[in-house]
Length: 256
Image (tube, rainbow, N blue to C red; front, side, top):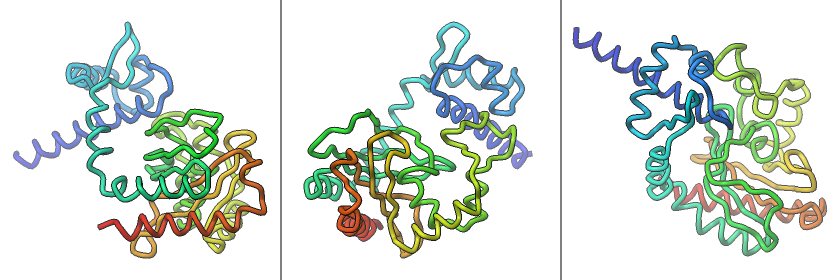
């Protein structure tokens, strides 16, 4: 009986997290039926979960639509102030931005996306806003250097989500790719030790990224420098890759 109660409690927790992840992944408020469909849950179950989350401030409601609630900032703040990764990365990113004049960022993979964890502006501010916690795709920009360190089967699973699983496919996050060509590109990035992008996500912008290798192999994070293409000409890439590689090593060496 106790085991059954524990299993039921765990399933309830998983369903609540599923609902929060649906709301996290949406850029607009959602109706109850949309949340239930994307989470793969009955409408009545979804309603009960939303009621509890709303009472705890984790969800907010405007009329018939729901969005993430302000209380989620409590967990985000706790992570930002206590994470050993961020403690190690912040001074390194400041030094990297100062030495290159480019905006330096730290990304961490979460499932099939990457999240902005820290950012230090370069000499020239970027043309676009990219707030901490922003969810970005893996198949462009700094995400590629993370994919390059995965085996092909894992990459394909991430880039080709099962139809009907969770939220509908978003081409910006769940791309349809030629896997053979993409695998060849990933092999080249892994051999070079860095990735570079020019106008892939934002027109006129360029970047160089390196994976943070923990224990020589684990790659959940990446360091990137980015700026306007005129600030980051092709001939500057080799020297920048050395500096970004040095920054990635400095972060990895400070992690427990």
